Every structure is written in structure tokens, then in C-alpha cells.
Image 1 (cartoon, rainbow, N blue to C red):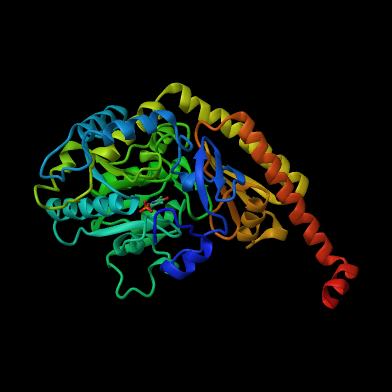
Image 2 (image 1 turned 90 degrees about the horizontal axis):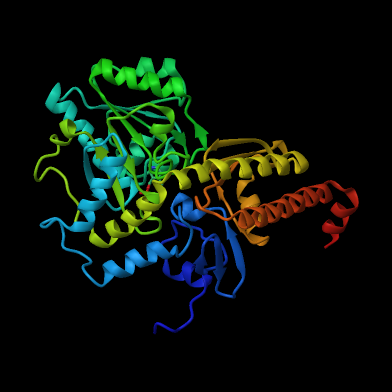
Length: 421
Ligand SMILES: *Cc1c(COP(=O)(O)O)cnc(C)c1O
């Protein structure tokens, strides 16, 4: 197949491993919060590549950083260090509690590193018994065997042979359950500050504070998976800063590269020593191209103007979502922090997030789901007011259409006609 030969959506089914079910259109170009498909149809992007495109599509500063680095040096492996990686690490350290950084390529890999660090730390400070990881039910940490085991959602972990053992699962936001699960055998408590994939459910501050205390009491590490909540998404650079609860280990990915694959595990100097030379690694981790782009992303996001802009946009988004919810019955609740928003579907729409997503797409709007009952939005942190308003008009059209279709389905005449057809 030559580079110019055309491909279409049906080729996906012919060529790809069927672990995804992508939408019917194929995006070919993006600019800011607008995306165009193969046929020139324009869509508004409230999905942000699942909280990745934090600065929208083709942001000029990111394009410049990528092109500049592309002409200099792409890859050297970790047999050598490189300037972009050192600059990015220095800026991440300056902006957070962390003193040491490990780079990886995806959220799952950053979490894998965090969990391995926690187990090494437990082993080296207390002994082999200190290996248990306490994690939240319905959490999400990636798709490697270790990360699906920690997340404890059978739909992701079952059917791949024995899962990784030594993991205890507790109900999210349930302080009593957390207290009961943590012991001298615990090496880490692992939490998402906002449950992202499972419904956009923010942690209560008291819950995270109690997790911090329990870790201190038992010599365990508090690990925050900020793959989705980090890099400005909640209106601070990281959600831990908004909650005022500092973890021992933090993982970042998704928005860190603004669309270029990169991830990081951040921790303190005293903990970093538990992953000594040869104990862990990655061929691509800290790749100069990825780090150059991430540095440009961080330079823009870690500014008071952008972070304040996220909080302002939160108000605009949630006001509109509540209005559409009230007028059409589509949403019964709107929740989330910053620009990670969840519209909980109303009674008539329970379990139908996929249908809602599809209808939005037909109206020219890209949105996400977070489980079957929640529509999730994770737009660009710098989305224009005009794009928000136009996206909301499209969402409202989708909501009205769904409501009208549901109304017709209940209308006996329509049922009769449908039956004849
Ligand atoms: C997306 C996500 C991950 C996994 O990241 P990948 O880059 O897909 O490996 C892990 N944790 C959370 C909270 C996420 O949202």
C-alpha cells in the first residue's frame, strides 16, 4: 500500500486487533479545539484525546518544540542522558514536592514503576512481608498485568492467568474500609484523587488526609495516580496541590506530553535510592523528542493565567451542563474538578452513555464516557469561549434529539408505524 492510497474505517476491522471499537469517522487534522475528518466535516473536541490534548491540537509552541528537537536529536537511550530530559526533570522538581524523576512512555508504565518502587521500599525498610498494596475498587491505573491487578476491575483483569497477588481493594472515599485494610504489611496506598474512568468522582479531602496519616503510621508510601488529574486539569498543576495532601510518589502521563507519549514518576530523594542502578528501566523513557515537547507543555500550563483559566472555564462548562441537564433531563448531576467534568445521566438515560456519545458525534461534538452512566468531558485547558458555546449548542441539540426520540418511542402511533416498517 503506497502512502497516498486511501484507507477508511472498514480497514480497521480488516487490519487491527479488535480490542478497540473506534467511531465511524477518521479524524485527519486538528487545530485548537476543532477537528476535521476525512470528508472535511468539522467537530468540536470536548474529549481532548482522553485528557491528553491539554493545549488542544497543533498548538504552535508545541509544534515548534517538536520540530526544533526533531532536527537535533531524537533518541540516545538511557546509556546517555540528554538535555531535554534534564530540563524537564528540573522544572517538574521545581513545581512539585518531588526531588527525583523517572521517565516512562505511558501512564501504565509510570504506575508500574511506582508500584515496584513501593515494593522495593517495603522490602528494604521492613522485609518481604511488607508488600501489600491497598487500592480503590473501580480505580484505573493502566493495562499492564500489574496495573490491572491493582485496579481490581475484573472486566480489565480477568482472563489473563493468575493476577498479581498482595493487593487489597477498598471502597473509594470510605475511611473505615481504608483503616481496616492498612496494616504493617502495607507498602503503599494507591489512589486517584478523582476517579477518572469510573465516573469522574472526586475524593473527599478527609479521605486523602486519612490516607496520608495511615501511610505515616505504617511506614507505607502514599501513591497518587495523577495520570488523568495532573498537568493543570483540576486548576492546579497537580490535584494533590488543590487538596493540600502531599503524596510520596506521584505519576503523570496523558497531558504531560500534550499528545506526544511520555510519562513520569515523581518522588523524594530518600525514596528514589530504592531503585538503584539496574533495578528498573525503559528504552524510550526520557526520550529527547518527548521531553522537549513536555517541557513546552509544562512551560505553558504551569502559569497562573492558564491555571486560573481552567477554574473560570469550569464555571462556564458546569453552568451550561446543569442548564442542559435541567431542560432536557439528560443529566441529573454535574460533578468533577476543573476541566475534568462528569454529567451523571438522568434516570431515563442510565446505562446509555454510548448512545449519548454517538448522538453527540452526529451533532459534531466529541465527548467521552466514564462508565455506562456518566458523560465525561476533558477538553483543552485553553479552549476558546466561542468553542465552548458552540460545543454546548451541539450538546443541547443532541440532548433534545435524544429526548424527542425517546418521546416518539413511547407514542403508540409511532410504535405502530415502526412495527409495520
Ligand atoms: C489513562 C490512565 C492510566 C493509563 O495510562 P496509559 O497511558 O493508557 O497507560 C492510568 N491511570 C489513570 C488514572 C488514567 O486515567
